[in-house]
Image 1 (cartoon, one colour):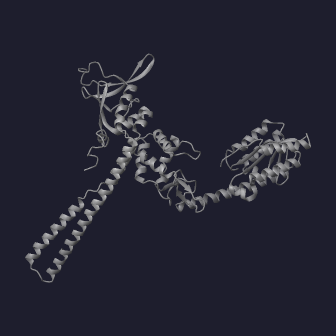
Image 2 (spheres, one colour):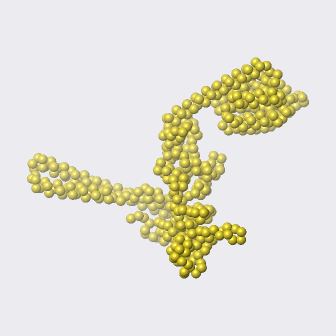
Length: 517
C-alpha cells in the first residue's frame, strides 16, 4: 500500500495554539495513526477518527503534539518506511518522551516492530500511549502490562495472518475462474460493480497501436514512446510512458488473453486486445531475434551501402583525430583502389545528413497519405465484393452440375438410358465439376495482411522524416533498412533501391502500379 507523511498541518497548529493558551508546561509527544485498507476505514479506524481521538487524548493528558504521521500501509510488511522513520525520529529527539497510537494493532502486528517499541521504552525512556483504550506503557510498567501487550500483538498477528490467508485464497479462486485478481493493466479498467476487467475505450487503441507498430521492427522503444506520447497517450499521472514501462506492457501476455498469477498461467475471461501471433512477433523484436542487419562496434550503417565504383561493401572504421574518435565510412577496396580517385571516406554525421533527402522523397504529407489509405480501403471493399460474387456464381454452377450428375445416376439405375450414353454424360459432368472446383480454388482474394501492411506503411510514411531527424544513429539505420534494400554510394551522392511501396511513392501518386496483381 502507499505511504504518506504530513507534518504540522492546520489541525496540529490549531491544537497546539489552544493547548498553549492553557499551560506552558506541556510535555512533547508524537502521534502515529495508521490504516491498512479501505475496509478498516469503514470499521471506524479512519485516519480522521484516529486523529481526533489522539488530539483529545493529548489534551486530556497535558501533552503537546510536536509531529504526526498519517499513514496508509500494512503493519505486516518487512519494511514499514513511515513507522521506521517515526522510530528514528523518536530516538534522535530525547526531549520528546511520549508516542501516541490508537490501539495496539495500529502500532504493530509483528514481533519485529514490537521489539522496536520495547527498545524505545527501555533504552530511550519513551512512554507509549493508546488513545482509544487509555492505556500507557513505560519503563516502570509491570511484567503483567508487558505480557498483556505481547498477547495483544500476538492476537493482532493471528488476525493479520488469517486475513492474508483468506485474501490469497480468494485471489487464487478468482484466477481459477479466469478473473485477474489485481489492478487492470493499461488498456483495461476494473469494473468495481461487476468485479470484471473491461476494455478502456480511451487507452486500449494506444495499446493496439503499440503492438502493431513494434511488430514491424521499425521502432525502438524510445521512438515508440515518443510516437504514443505525440498521439495523446498519457500515464496515470498524465506523464509520458517511459521505455521501461512500455517494454513491460509489450511483454504482458494479458493483452492476448492469458495472465500469470503466482507462477501459473491462466486463461483470462477478459477480451484480448491483440492476437497471440502478434504478441509473438513483438516478443521476437524485443528479445533481439529480429535483426534486419548485423552491426559491429556500433557502425550502424554497416551492410547497408555498396560502392558505386566497384560494387564492394561500404563499412565503418573508427579513426582518432586531434584527440577524438570519429567514425568514417568507406569502400572496403576489396577489388583494388583503381578508379576511386582517393574519394569515398565520409564522416558518419555527414552520411546521416545525406540520407535525409532520400527519406524526404518517401515521406507523404497527411493529405496524400489519407488519400492513399482511403483508396486502399475502397480497393479492399471492391476486391472482396468482386471475389465473393464470382465465388457465389461458381458455387451455384457447381451445385447445378452436381444435380445433373445425380439425376444421371438415377436414370441409369432406373434403366432409362443405356451404358454408352451414361458413360459419355458422366465423364462430361465430372469434367465440368473438376473445372469449376479448379476455378473456385484459383480465386485470388487478397489477404488481410496485405491491407494491414498497407495501412501501417502509409501511416508511417507521414512521419518518416520527422522520426529520422530526431532518431539516434541506431534508429536511423532501422528506418533506412525499412524503406530500402540497399544504397549505392557514388562519390558524395547516394542512390537507394527502394522497397515497395516506397519505390512507387517516389514515382508519384499518378502511378498505376499501386496494387498487387
